[in-house]
Length: 219
Image 1: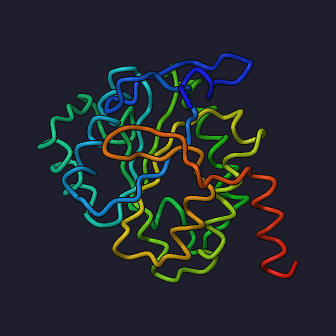
Image 2 (image 1 turned 135 degrees about the horizontal axis):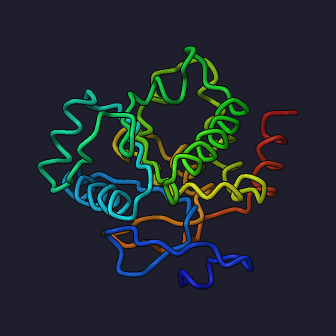
């Protein structure tokens, strides 16, 4: 599916992702299931830099490195950070702090913060927002983390898509089992394959997936 087909009838702002030659609608929700660390670093660095160049707020939720180590790694990949304190246009947080600020993952709280953060970013004069998160934090068994898939599915509902934060969810194929990877694919409309965004053939529409998830959980 082309980027133009992915756009809604409201004609959302089209953006460069940095690593893909085609423009995509702001708010595109993508997964990157990877086992090649060098390719992942290259893709994510280009994604970050294109957001900075476009005057978007760029956020990174890091799990495998410290924030300082992450910035060093991104700098080695060519990312030029704004000449300002952290927390301005570029924001890096430990993933556990971002997703579980009080030690618990809460879907409603995350969705509410997503809206609040986007509204604040626009008030501050930026044109949009993009975020990427290392999802390995979910393997640590934190309270509520089993609801991550529900959260990912709800990002695809019409109500949440109205907050056009562009996102890449990074999943290391070496640490997630097959059942989890299947669910991950089911809740991401787009996936990154060899440095390009493609329509995900395994994607399940949000309403259908959430109904199936409710049946699975017995609710």
